[in-house]
Figure 1: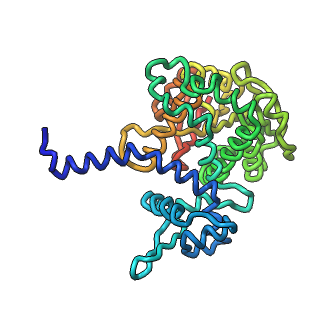
Figure 2: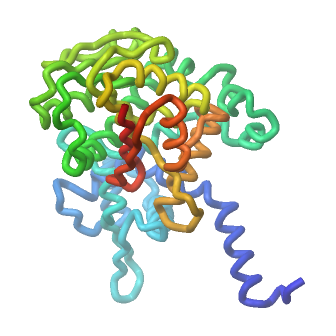
Figure 3: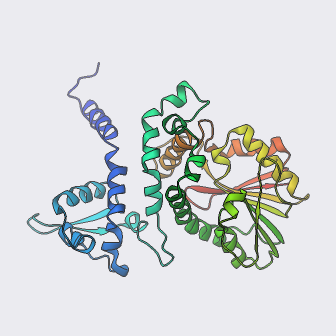
Length: 355
């Protein structure tokens, strides 16, 4: 074996220690979200560097442990969430938000990526993570089910707080993504009737309609119990149903983060129903995470591959993120004549299937 004192061996040992202790990162991120640190620093855009004590005075007037908060802030600084400002003699550290940290700031609509962080770290989900290896031993049941006794969506449905947090998390992620889509993708032009499959409360449809007045009829299609709680939106009709049975007819079918939580056979069934629902020349527009062909150490690749393991662990052991080639093949199998991928966002990709 290589000399244990060599630089490469020392680097390898450091790397495995970092990986073994990696849980400190998401749990510390969870902590600063729960403590509302980002909003405390941001203060309407000031983003002035603050010490841990100054941050605490804004979020916990009754007091708290500034030293422990500083330890969390310093660690997250090493992952680019905060910028650290040290005075001349090194006795005082202050922190401001980086571009990453700003994603946790609550916007005018009450949204941010903070809910997404909290959604991932709820007790029921955390119970599933020690069982990831079970997805290898038995892929018929995802680790979440083995940890909690039932599928994630069924579990959420019985827990209003969890379900509400999930919806808020999805809104926090969806809104900036849809803004990027609407500024860069023109595939809704010429569409008069649009169906959003799995549209939840109809937020995405509302944004699309505001940008495309040519759409005269919009249907938010989701499970009956979901659309029953959907708010009234001008121009949108809420329709309950089951996408595995049929989908309302339209010029175009839109869906976001739907296919990734289902197996290949289930995706084929959903896409077959989409194919039946559109006329010749119609289209299916799917916004999904798309894996790169090659694995590398970029933030994008890591986020996508980590998301893939999240799906495998929480939602479906054989549900998965797919490559562009895999999506194209699924489209061909159900009859779509052409396929194109639009890489608009670093995580989601717009996939267009034409009939």
